[in-house]
Amino acid sequence: MEESSANFQSTRKYDDEHIEGDSIRCFFIERINDHGYTEIESAWEPGQFLGFNSRGRFQDPSTYRQKPKCFSWTKLQRFVPNSELHRCSRQSRKKLNHTQPTHHESFLRNMMRASLLQKIRATEDGPYNSRNVTMS
Image (cartoon, rainbow, N blue to C red):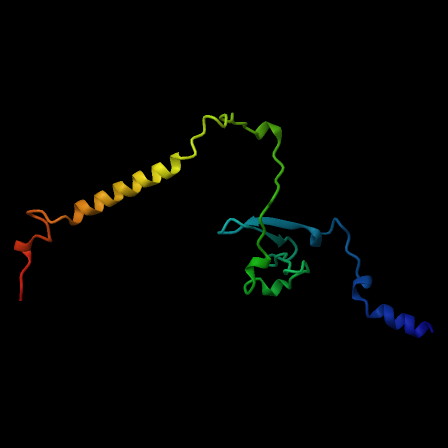
């Protein structure tokens, strides 16, 4: 009976090696990638990143290039000390004008349209004047 229990324990590798919490293997470096996402890189093995699949299980670090979204993080909460907070005063709801963006958008659209029409209008010296067009 002792043989089977000894055999069982030898197959469990994670029991053989215990890593202390203050080991370099437990430290990670937070990096921001080119797209603005946070990536967590191992301090013990540079180039290895911490990732999870869609079910929340650890992602194999060798798939970092094939599945980059499993290794990119967005911080939903960030601690900011009160000394860094700069509060803004809010306008009352009565002063807000909700029709302003649509008026502003139509004004810009009309300005762009007028500018385009000005460029292609058939004028005396314009490219679309019938005297400047040659028929072959």
